[in-house]
Length: 462
Image (tube, rainbow, N blue to C red; front, side, top):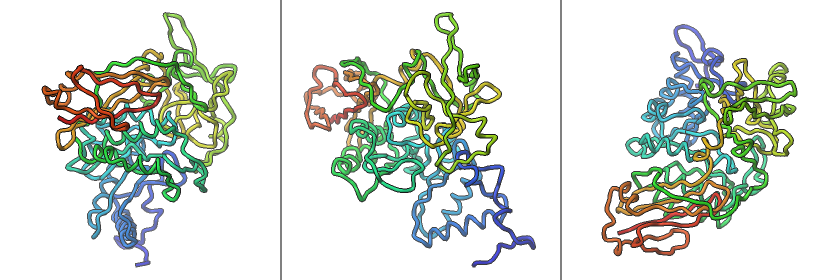
């Protein structure tokens, strides 16, 4: 009612309930947790969310409370507060870095959706790691929701007209994803039953984008399927040469190494060091010979995404660029990849005393392994299956490679996963959804050439 909160004979203020030691990992000067052990903290949350409800708000996204900034007590306090309101309010929590199915196990009964990845922007390097994350949550039986609610969230769909991260004006450009890449992202999000949150400007929505985000088959898969999972029984081979995408540099083939991200307590994150040439290097063994993978330090650009650093911090942190290349700066928005240097904390790194290369954006540390070890994770083909509510089978092929690939599955293997026999194959229809073309199952397999970063979707009805 516009008065100070009084409890136990004292007035409480914001400074009494803000937990200054629990600040947001990516905006430490902007957000902090609330002390929900104190009655004043809980009263603040009730006042805040009642105000939102009075304004007609029906969706709340709560940042800096999951993954890296995991705060289960605050999640449960907010959830209980929202349930007391007279109107239903969806609770979405974020960010999703360092999220595992085990971590999600503890909060799914309290939230409607939870981010399981870092920010997803309009670049293939952001889209690609979602295949591994989605597979993990499918394997853990999480993507079917909890009693029809609590859904793993793969983040927004950055299609159509967009603006850049950290820029407060726009939209001023079209998505950087090719249409094949947009289609691939939409199919994976649908197969993984992720909430479909459009990230572009609805005022400038073209027909292709509208048709994609409202495609009836994709929405049916997203809403009305079960047994959604990655399908491992596939064969694939390249049918064309590698097609490099301008403005993107994949570290997979840089010196035979693959960079990745892991929590900093992972033993594989150590071994980085600063050389006399102002390089950051890590040694590794190739056929019993010692070798090093190195990157050059670059001048730290001031960030424009709300992350501020003191002068001392500036000296300890840096950008990283490829040696003798024009690939740009090492970017850790989802997985390490060189991209155009910009004023954003996702390209800020520091070398710790423990010999770890730590991202200022996610708090994760860089790992390195041979490209042969990482090949199945970064290139090649994937497939997903799902079963519709009328028994139809959906089969999606994804080509994560930079060259076209022929992808094939055997019908007997599909029967094993689908849990049903396609015995009377002559009575089954197999339709390729994009073209509407039908094909026979009588030859015993389903195959298709899929373009780089593209996808194909089949619907089988018997």
